Image (tube, rainbow, N blue to C red; front, top):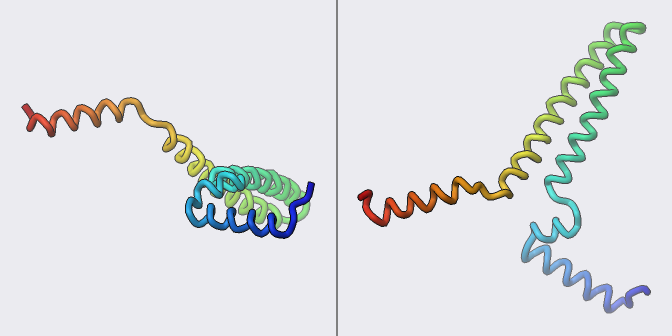
Length: 117
């Protein structure tokens, strides 16, 4: 069932208000999180690596220049993939609370409260 023009405008206003109030939530609801972006970038870099490998091998038959270009593509793809994967790993580790840090935080607070004794 299609929305009327008035309902469509109201929905757009609600979406704009949500995006202004909480951009992270709006991005999550849209499915465009940085984690998704970096995963996609890492997958594309993997495809670039395969293309570079094909150019490297094919260049052995054609020209050394094609092999060099293939190697450069492989190198660039590897750098992009590693940097993107690090972002994904850092985000996934940052979201999970570290149980040891909670214990040390409590001990630090107790130490400060008791003036070290």
